[in-house]
Image (cartoon, rainbow, N blue to C red; front, side, top):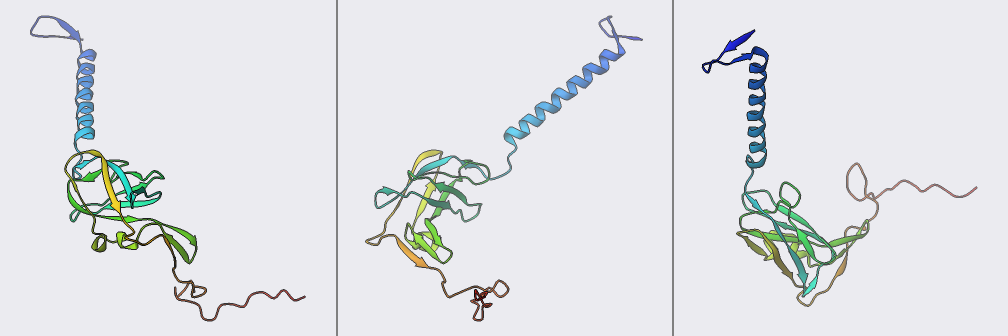
Length: 183
């Protein structure tokens, strides 16, 4: 069966439906691609990378966090050369725009109760770090400068008071007897 168009030509019915279906599919695909590329309802972020130095030398491990007052923090792992890239939602997507406090945590666990601090503990908290950054545009040269202020890396005993009771979470004053090795 055929239909006559205003131009006087004839087209089979099957082709007419196939044409509409392909056209609708193209429109749907274009809308989906536009949404995937531009419908990010999350706050605007810009790529940020840089280095963390302590007394002029690269900090060789740890984490940096930029903490917006009204948004999700951006974090980055500090590499052996002191470099980092920030992530807020997706890998390396950067940080929210604005002026924000910064924290740096750099330590390594030596034993379950001993920790070596590679940067002063004051940098762990936004209230004591004294660090802020202003993010206005993408950048790959953000420098975070820390100082020991005459101090140096130290080892902290984090609770060697004995065994911890897994039920109470408190030091166990009556641990189970160790098995006897006597015959």
